[in-house]
Length: 357
Image (cartoon, rainbow, N blue to C red; front, side, top):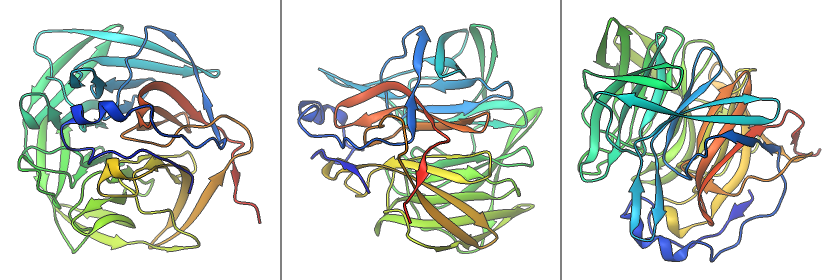
């Protein structure tokens, strides 16, 4: 895979140690199947570790994240709405009154039974967070409501909405920075309800995995970093009431490099698209990836395809990006590369090629 080089320390230690290194290393120059979108409206601050989710009307909400300043890591508590159309993206900063969430990074957002929910993360001064919030947007203003927390604090976990209107939360780190392996279900019917899911033996405890939903009501988990290092395993989980069955999906063909803190989303053809990430558990000490792969899962089998350039520009190798699907195409925002944090927006081009035969 193509990589961007940067020798740093682990990305999950205090970030002020990273600032002196930015701008000292090279970024891969190969083109890829991404097109950078021209931005209008207000200017989004560069960031990494933010969360996004797509609404029913095709707009996207983004909250939080972090960036590196001269005095160290700065964690954000802002809410943005973005609209993608005709090769451009329009940004609107959303104001909110009343009680609002604190700053955070490495949290997740998902639509649960038509309601936008945000859970967990890591905040300045408080560390690991366990709070759950609902947000309702009306034009350029929003109303936040804090709901029942359940799984305990977590950050760097995976979260995916599934077809029954609930969301699943897997893995992450707790207040002691210990890896988590538990699976929880979040439902929303008037009130929020958390259910711990008992399951068959599944993925090892990990952080920084990618988790998406599939059309058949299951969820997929790819990669992440754990006690044994960084992985490239692919798992499918299906629910039956308060129990779940995990199945490791057997894949044919060449596999992506093991990675963590990568971007992941589901495409219109129900294929999972992954981009970037770190191939090493010590995130800052290794190159960061700029490759993109597609996997189609059929039952317990899968086929991976590396996607190669035809036209378009390059997204630099980076970690802690946010990716969502908007009208069947992938949209990527921000992240951390060898050049620092980004505020750019990219859309996956349909003319990207598979590997030559």
